[in-house]
Length: 358
Image (cartoon, rainbow, N blue to C red; front, side, top):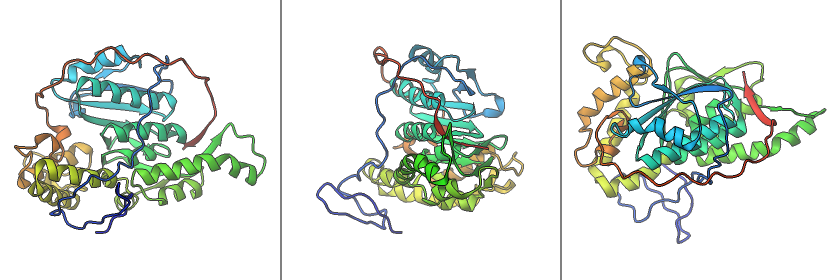
């Protein structure tokens, strides 16, 4: 395995192909640091959201999110402190208000000490700029992303997958060419000029999240009136399925220090077995009482059964064990944080954006 990463602080680069090697310095984080959050009044105008404290989505999606104000989000998320995890179900378009939801929920969960986070999404697409903004918040706040069998992730939604720490996908994932909403272009040249800035941002976003540049190519070549559905092999090849490669590289060094090299070896063995057995789980992989299926609940059941064979959850590092976001445990939670950030003044509203909608 070869890897390419940013230079070490002393100007040298280091490449490792062994989990046994103890690294002397953590690599530079390639994700984009989250900027200060704007708490100006905003509401979800193109979708609906729910908070739930568990992963059992067949039993429901929890409480509806009625406000994006800090206090309201905190009150809605607070019951999940005991379980130590929150699942955010979102159905709708990827717009600026969804980006605000992603940013604000990440901040609130950090203040509450809720570190296991699942974005359970069903979206036909939206604005590329909003997807990049939301994706940066997702990447900085350690979210697992689900696309259930009854859900989809099309067009701009695909960009969110690039940012997730772990991507569990059972529903349809499709992509096509982005287009400029509110464009005044009258020629190919003018349209190209309009798209150039967002194209540069998109390429940089994919690179820092470890996704293939092929995703950009698809978003500039597949006709907007069609939809290219991606299979599991393509999703993996494009860096959109399973563990995020950038986060995985960062975690390898951190986990070797905190949990030991044996933990890292067992984790790698679990990941290989998971890829081989749980992408399309059969009855044997799911265990007694489960029928063959291909939904997120089936994939999770397969993984939970499989990980026990590799010694997980680890006694010494339970929160770093694979699929820890599914473990409902009582955590030693920090005291409530102080008052919310001082809201920033509202900025000018804009209706323009680069959209990738079916």
